[in-house]
Amino acid sequence: MDRKEEILRLVEEGFNTAKELSRYFNVSLMTIYRDLKELEEEGRIVRKHGFIELKKEEEPQGKVCAVCGKEVELRLAFIYILKGGKKVHTCCAHCGLIAYRTIGKEKVEMVMARDFITCNPINAFMGSFVVGSSVAPCCTPPAFVFANPEDAQKFAKGFGGIVTDFEEAVKRMEELMRSGQRADISL
Image 1 (cartoon, rainbow, N blue to C red):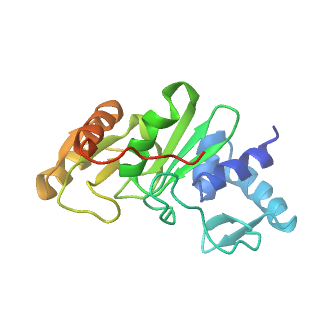
Image 2: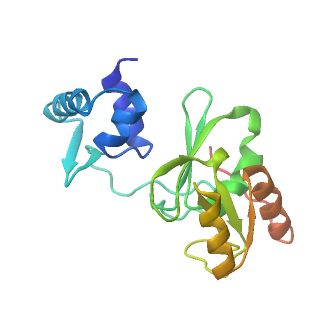
């Protein structure tokens, strides 16, 4: 896959600045700017106020959560990238953790999320989670992901919840949801 196609894939997954792309490819900003200029001229991306977006086809609505059906807001979303390239979107860490067991560990290539404080894209498998806090911007019981474990500890100190890694967060969410019904994931 050439770099421009890879850039399009990464922008779709949440890399939205030239700086992030430059770091990812380990090339100069000038190299990325040249690629972005070509992609913009081809009508495949739009650059606004320093951010990069894919040029949208006329889509009547955004992606919906595979667990609860809510519209997916990028700031809170989990995006599972399955082996073979298929993507499963969830609206928040709560639904993302529920989806993990249903999708199956063996099918997951990677999972992207955004740090709750900085909104920077992170590998959710490497994140620190706060499960069961008193703050619920989306689904309940709430879960949040942080790139920095210290940020997760501070959040939990202020708003409650338990700080865990990804695998433990999946178990905790299952325990909290045990009394509810099984979620059907639309793949």
